[in-house]
Image (cartoon, rainbow, N blue to C red; front, side):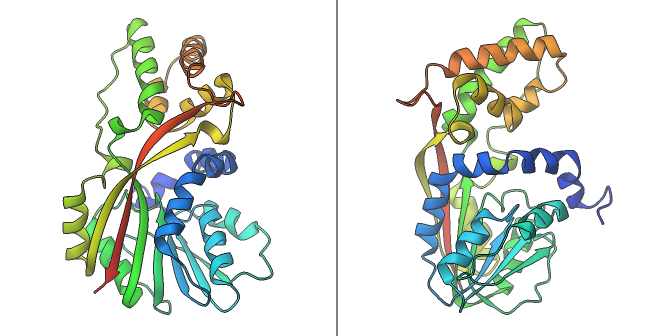
Amino acid sequence: MSTPADPGARWADERVQRWLAQADALDRQMAPITALLFEGAALQPGERVLDVGCGSGPTTRRAASLVGPDGSVVGLDIARAMLDAAAAAPPEPTAAPIDWVEADAGRWEPEIDLVDAVISRFGVMFFDDPVRAFASLAAATRSGGRLCAMTWDRRDRSPIFQVPLAVVLRTVEAMGHTPEPLAVDGGAFSLHDPDVVTATLSAAGWADVAAEALAVELPVGGGLAPEQAADAALWIGPSRIVAEGLDPDQHRQVRQAVAAELAGHVDASGHVVLPGSVVRITARRA
């Protein structure tokens, strides 16, 4: 169970429920990023795979499908509710068995068979001690095994964050609020720098480290019209942080302003699509 001093407390109760409520929409939004993850991981039938920060398990189940019944997959996450939701999904009959493990990767002492590949879609950016965490992942990986993780580039390189955030900031400032400045390179954006990534993973026992910035086009909320996309933009990320605490009328004004801006970013289907910049990190177990 989480305690206030436990990093898992950050992923409990209301926050996890918000994620779970939008899990399918987020998975659709991140489909281009998922494709880049599995392209880099190059999973093969029969391999053993560890999925770090697996959440409700979409990438874990995809890995299980790729490695097939002769392989095995571990889904690792800090939030019990996420794992419960993941385990509730019916297994594919031709996929590898999945073991759902509740643990903080930053403090984890692996007790699993060594894996051939570690994968992660946005599950490695929040470690309190990144070197220790990546060393734990290395300890779970066979010599010559590999890692492929997707992380965000700096926030200001991703219009999917910047476009709604700029509108929210202008609107709340016009209301007389002065939001706290938000870092462009902290939290979810902490692993954007190739030099930092290389130094961190090398110190943790990984070799041949590479961090490649890649551009993606992301359907906001998985494919939504501007008004619904505004809700999605205000549900997660920096825009939500800035708008948090507004009264209902003010929040309504912010939503309308964001929707008006997003109306200029629709595709042929009328769905909002915005660019993002992600970093694909690859490495080999030394």
